[in-house]
Length: 237
Image (cartoon, rainbow, N blue to C red):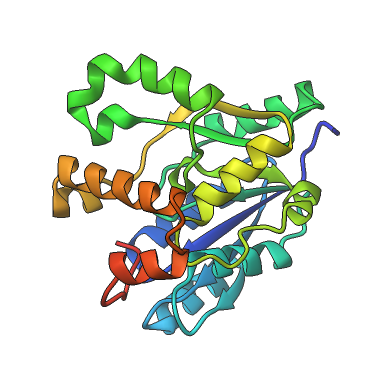
């Protein structure tokens, strides 16, 4: 791997305009500057279109939200040797980027991975168990979408990407990536917006997420889970 990595960020968007401006500003301020691709399924396309033109980033649009399809389509437009699938409401700083660069420069065996998640920010009651969660995540845990999953572009293609799944695309891809070869979950931890947890309650949101993953693991289709989770879907909330 060369000193200057060729990185592409794929950002799925669905009525996330309020977060997207800051997200694009942060990503395009990274050094060396990465490529950014926005994959949008917002109800009102004009603001996102205008924002992408302003920042000079690639944009692909979808008539309806489907995160797996949006991520796969964004990856098809990406030119980087390393793909980072990043949510618009999740922070990303130069320290996070330096950690990614250092990982791929110093370990040629790594195929992909994700970032640790700042779970205490979302679940304050889990402070005493944060170290257990960290060890579990680093070694065997699922790498979720809000951990900014990253992967070599060639490996992403070999694994068939996210397979257009509307829900649980991250759970499925994480399992296949871990089985395929060496992955690393790296620091510093990422922090995402807690708007979903404030809206539903931290414990209720956690139980809901765990229940959905369980249903997926026992064979309920992503399409059916998507209907249950988003009965009147307009956003990713």
